[in-house]
Length: 119
Length: 112
Image 1 (tube, rainbow over the protein chains, first blue to last red):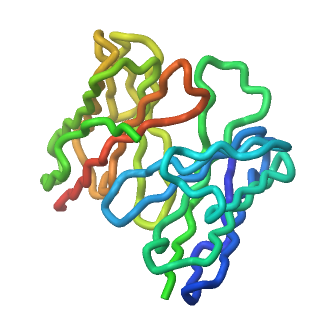
Image 2: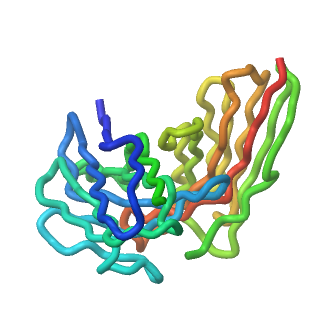
Image 3: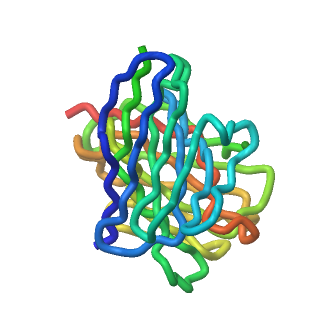
């Protein structure tokens, strides 16, 4: 159980275009999902917190107009990289928290990641 | 954002050897977590620690939550080739719902 998928797994796009990445919780409902970015040989950096039915909360330094997040249902959050540039090339990973988790620690289940390459 | 100080950055060991890595922080965390990431994949949770001083095992893995709540270590005993990967520590503060702070990662290479 607690499987998170991402689509696509890899995407190559031209500079200036927009790319949408989907994050789905396959066998559970997730009121909260997180989007991370990971550059080669570096750690995961939190970009934003996505809450179902409300606006995403972005971390400092992350442009909300460039990285559009939509959490339209309890099983789907999307990240759209608008007007992509080569410096946006990275590994984007989402995670999801089980809805209704009352434990002191809400375990995050991570997706397999999406490799974005902007030419 | 703030990162945890994780060391060593990389390790090259022989199969069968034990491995130890640690994370430190200048501030307190209420939960410490250890993840493993294989190339091109998302992180997978190995061990979660909830109390200061807690020592928890998962097979050949053992992790401890430091008494000061500012550090944690992970030990892997009798390493095998499939232990290869990147290991990350992560901390969670009680006031930040679900927002993890990650260490820089330890790249582990195991030679058969």
